[in-house]
Length: 133
Image (cartoon, rainbow, N blue to C red; front, side, top):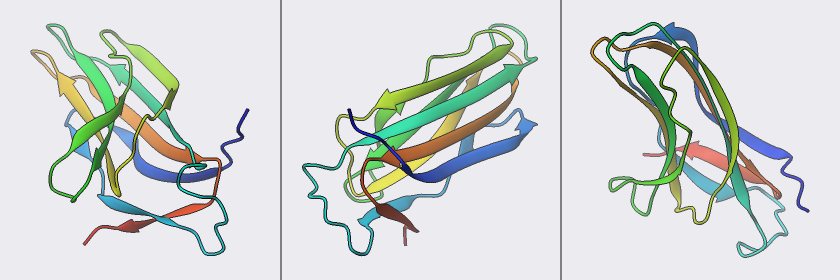
């Protein structure tokens, strides 16, 4: 078992809002003195969200995206979709991670729901995130 004690918050929506949120794009880089090879380093992600209100099938989903170039994005992890008032908190494995990451929320429905969210990238080895240029 691997302990994922190194972490970085990629997105935090603390005040409920009814608009999609896209966090800052970051580059994932080794920390100084990192003795773990890329093959030995594993990443996981905490995806947390709450939803309230909205009408006509409101939904909220939280995503972690990754990119090879900071332009073309693919989903690395996705939360279970909220379809009613409530919350979701999940710890997801990441199969592959490119050098760039970002987190986002997607809302849908006739009237969008209010939501909060938090996305935290964690690893078994040290790492840093830098704002992408």
